[in-house]
Length: 434
Image 1: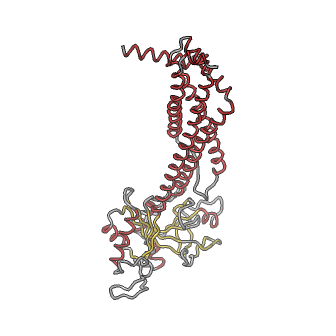
Image 2: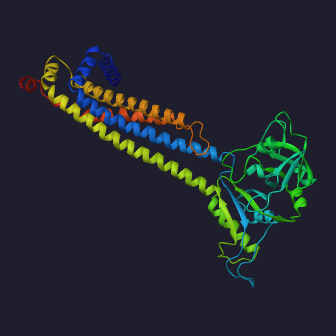
Image 3: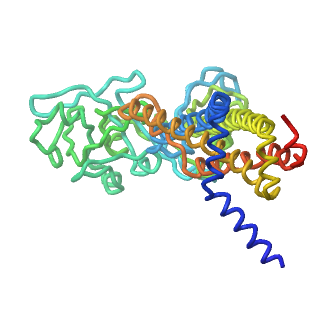
């Protein structure tokens, strides 16, 4: 019956796998062709090594860029007004444009893909004079930002324990409160002083410190000395009225950020009576586009490592098949004797295939170990790096498992060729061969 046949087949395979004589013959065959075997193993392990190292390197870049962008919404962009470059609607070229606070609601209505819009004002950046900040007998010039609480939905601000960021009550009541940077704290306060609740003077006006923000590299043009105050307080302090320097915008995760950017500019051109083809009237910086390019580059690296690795593995596996064919030819008489003594074709075929799988799997494991060792060295050398987006170059276990399964599969398939050649040898012909 089929059940009995399967049981017999399993017993034969078990016997071959755990038979001492079988493994002695395999290792004996390898020793006879030591140089050829080593060269072939190196070819296969080199393919796995390339696959592991390139995949790990691509993952390191991926992790590095994730670290750089982890505090900023992926689908985010920035928009600011410039000068027109084309005459339109009776206006001449070079008309200066100015964003207004009301534009936020206008964009919400016209571009439904937008999730968050944060109007922002600043002093001390983009060529504007940095305001003077004083505390007791210490002082300096620092960049001041006027922000809404919604800004933290687009770019996360880490506040040290005991403090907080600007909230809606600060906005509504135009409170004179501020969040200072780490460097600002170290320059204006003593090491043992707690700045929370204390006061600093910004442009001659006293502000209470409500928090200290941790500086995160890669957050754009901001620094560790920036001071954040409520947008409404900034407006009153510097008499900016309803003017806005720029908008930070974030679209929903499933939105096409490039299409959103274009829709935002079309909407603003319409509102400010700008020529529909005037590309210079509004400037933008699309962080989402950059992130998508990074993701595309990472995927390309993974695909390259897969193609190069598999191609090299195939070349090595073919070499294993050639070695086994030579081995079968050299062992013709031995195989004939085994067949004459009662060895079945299935036992002969299984032994050759087992030898092929063993060589393939051994090569794969060595390649994986060497690749992992190289990645560990790279990780140790880049662990403290914060300027370049690269960290933790690792290969997922699923990739390694897939590589091992590939080695076993290819080893089995390539082993069928010399195995069939061994089985096709007739015992009487093999015994006659000298």
